Length: 590
Image 1 (spheres, rainbow, N blue to C red):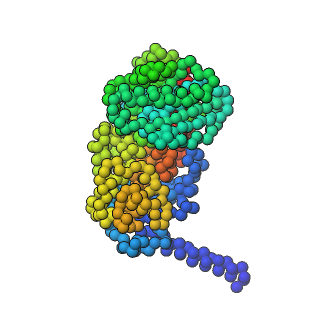
Image 2 (cartoon, rainbow, N blue to C red):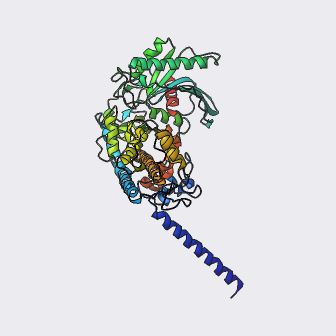
Image 3 (cartoon, rainbow, N blue to C red):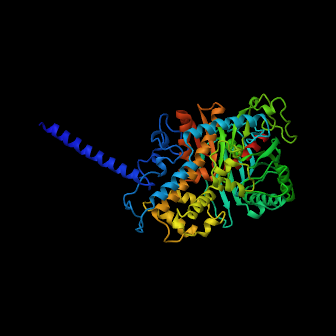
């Protein structure tokens, strides 16, 4: 036999043997009830394009190339790979795995929380239907509120403006300085009970104008959220006063009067760029005397009581502010999304496709005279605040579980904002608590050991959910630390199967949230015919900090719109809502 043929035959034999070993390993993986962590290299998550960068045409993430089970985490989410350093039939404590009980529990939960591809398409179709209904009439689930913003920044605006953001756990105030040419720079200060500074974001390239900003955020006390509205707005005015005192100390010549844009992240029936009435509170706010009132007037009155020379000239929603802020950098931005404590979206719509305002658009406020404040048929476009957190309040297509219904009953706004309760960061940890408490009560988790914290509403924070999903160790050591040290599970009660079940439940909750968001984005982009090119600006801690969230949204988008998902650019727009309010004030001033 020739030497080359022998070498070739020997090499082929080695390759076949290696292939057989790999096949046997794969079969062993499939036998496990649940997976351990995936290898950090070669996973679909590692292969996914970085967040904020448009993937190359034809590139695939795990859901497209790997054909992960619809509604489940992708391979990059460490859902289906077994470990090799833990015995298959016993946990590290030596106890046998309750395979059948764990398998039954996970199968039930997978079905309850799963959002398969068929359901995604069903959600998109129903979402477009509700958009049409909301644009035609006011008494619909999706409010589709016109924002009266009909001009987006071109990157050439100049001046000094203020923006404030009300709506979540923090009150934000910022100063935006727009100068000709350059890059955007910002400095951020965070004020919490511990007064911990937050790092400043890196400068980003923008248009012909240069944007410099200084920001501060202050945690809103819980008692003010549920107390008197006057006290709440006095608190906001005091924060503005303190912020101005800090920046005036470093500014040679402060302007005589400052123009301020207010981002108010609640459903408002808006009648002008600076006029509207609060329809209902959400996100845990219930302060009295505000529903049915104009938040602009309430903030202006509070500022006047502080004798501040500040005039509120614009009222925008957080999603509208995020869209406007990123449009200053990228003129192809047509959609702004909030993914934090709650969730919302705003997008650019043709005015002639808003039937409820066609032919009888309300006049602009007497205090505002710019194009941004006075929509007209000649401007052609208007930003619409969808209030998509209230999508499908009738639960016709939403995958609602018994746990979601419990959260809804216990909320401050029952039977409304159902999508937000399935998506928002305010609710995800509570969902985990309810599921774990249910499994403990049936003896399927922790051997039925009593865990008092699981019986206490709000005892688990969303940060713990993120920490659980980040644990890729072989024995899920950090999951054990979370359960034993922060949740209070007895130290001898957690097995490796318990920890894998807990992690899988966290994955199911986080994945469902991301896939529902993808359905909403796909519906808006499809309805507005922007599948060829659309930038989606996303602001909020859930999108920025929750493990694998951005990749899960991208995976689901590809399942819905196919290769057209490559033309939908998802970008993080940090603190965009407060910057956007200041930019709307700038548009008015121009």
